[in-house]
Length: 347
Image (tube, rainbow, N blue to C red; front, side):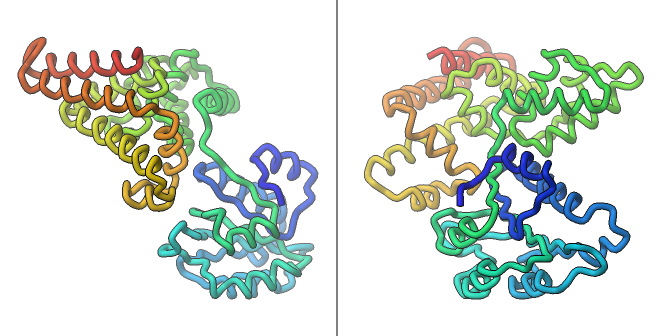
């Protein structure tokens, strides 16, 4: 069965025709969880007995057979019951699995003849599509993959959320917000809700308000900055750099993080050139599951010569900061790293 996108699922749900089994997975966990809630709400409606027909099992705490046993029970005074199976993990190396090979027979038996009066939703935190048990799920369910949104999609999302709350924001403010928060949609939504409250009573979000209210403790993905540098995406790269430095990050520490990511890209490219399998490359570099595809794709499309030049340029910046070239102290260090980033996005 083909893997659907979130818009495909939206169109299906508009008809209120439900499939016995759904599989929701992907790196965009906010939209994935929102989809699970939407299916649940539409399937059960406002039934007064909803609490008796809505069952949730986490595979971190329960076994798959108990969840499927609940799915086989008849609903109480309602056409259907809904069983949500969360925290599903089928990892690349199998070490973190909570849906295991020994569960395959039980799962296959249920998927062959799913209960007609139940809707089962599998919500996967990690799903390696190459694994046999993953393929079993993918082939016997409506499988929907939720991928991270691109910048323009995030901007549209932010505008829609603001419009729904009768709040306005200028384009510059929205782009700054997206540039600072990145593609963490859950975090972006939380920040939008905070800004909506702060913008009262005028209901107008300005650039200055965004800059003032995004917390200094924000965890910025250093790989996002690296990716912007490689893709020569100048504006978001400079926005993120400014925010990191304004929040008090030490330029040398930031330089070390940038160097580390480019070094890992260099090593990934070399390992792949030698024919090392993707899974082994990810293990050696200790790449988070959600970042593996993006990271390795970046390594593949970046020329070795470019990576070597970047590492040399980073080394020169390191020396310049330590020897106070262009001025000592915080000002001189900041100037050197700003020059570096400008050169990298313009190279």
